[in-house]
Image (cartoon, rainbow over all chains, first blue to last red; front, side, top):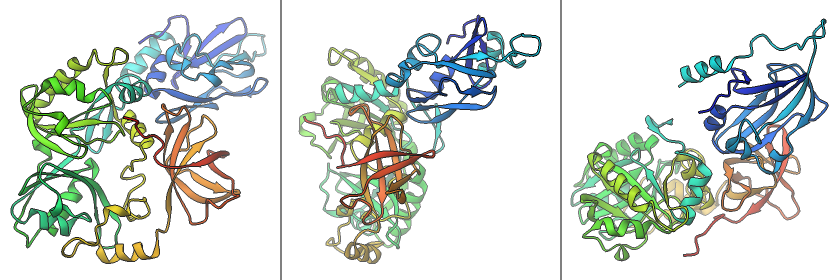
Amino acid sequence: MSVPADLRYTPEHEWVSIDGSTASIGITEYAAQQLGDVVYISLPAAGASVTAGEPCGEVESVKSVSDLYSPVDGEVVEVNGELEDDPSLVNAEPYAAGWMFRVRVAQDGNGELALPADLLSAAEYEELTKSAG
Amino acid sequence: MTSFSGWQMPLRYASETAEHLAVRRAAGLFDLSHMGEIAVAGPGAGAALDYALVGNLSALRPGRARYTMICAEDGGVLDDLVVYRLDEDEFLVIANAANTDVVFSSVRDRASGHDARVTDATGDYALVAIQGPEAAGILAPLAGGLDLDAIRYYAGAFGEVAGRRAWVARTGYTGEDGFEVFCRPEDAVPIWDALASGGAGADSGAGLVPAGLAARDTLRLEAGMPLYGNELGRDVTPFEAGLGRVVKFDKPGEFVGREALAARAASGPVLRLAGLTVQSRRIARHGYPVLADGKTCGTVTSGAPSPTLGVPIAMAYLEPGADGDDRVLAVGIRGAEVPVQLTDLPFYRRRH
């Protein structure tokens, strides 16, 4: 199972890729495998503001419905429209074509990206999935 | 893996959608050893089952199978069953794993006074099912002393599979042709391995794949088959589920539930089991409300994406009149009203 080293993670199994002030977000391969075949994804609208740790969408698989959490605070600038026609991209390429949405990350008083302190490294996330069995 | 009625079972081996389609196009292999087996043997076995169940089992010929139910006095369904008549004086009752204890104790109690022994033989059997259009072709070269062509739908015979003694029945829960192989637990792995390697090259395309509980559920749903706990339960009679035909009022002797079931047959079902096609990718799941003109008129019992039809499907219990001419039906999916269309059951019927 793949956990790319250059990404950050949440305990709710989202991954975050930071490029400048933009965060790209999806769910991990571990999450996709646990869910099974994804059949429907409800994403926040472009322009919506999202809050770290709060649900902002749903991922529906054959057997379950799960909340999708935003890992960061900010404004949604883009969503992956491909997933509407082909939600199975999340299973096939969770870290590439299966990305879900992009957020312009909020900045703190010093103009620095206000990233939550509890985002996990790849090693920390891998540890978490192992202890979850 | 998932916990299922005290058994550890695979929900899926890889992709449940791929497993489902393999069963429709080639074949799938299922480990169903969780199912309950209750043996009823003796000269009075047929009469005991006639009294205990709603079907006419004494009329079943040896080597044949029957889909039937066991009901409470009030007509509520305790379980749906497949019964095999292995021999003149020997029946095998197949119960859902979660209901095995209830079925066993009910049949045992109801058999008292008949010349029949009732034993819970669940631990004596493993069950491997091979289902799909290629099932017979894969099983045939491994089946010793068995002419599969002579085993008709809902029939079975003793023989050998991969050199191990087994009861091989042409039954299943997928809507496809296929076989269920009942064997000793220690023979299950060699039988599984032989079928798996024998089927690997089947059908030039997909071939045989192992299939888990998730595919089993979508396959039976497309085939319009009820699942106990969803479409069937203590709170409904067979008539609500559209399966009143399993109740044989004209069989010899009394049976448990006759009075209540006769009353329900006369008055008509309280609810009607209907098929729904969802006009969205979202799934109408167990327990979601069915709405007619915004008002609740029923409840979804099972829902899943249909890999064969490409849209989500569901079964639901509807109140009388819910499906009147000009009413627009919807399902409440977590706050949203998603339109649905009434669809005849089954959603899928095999062509071969």
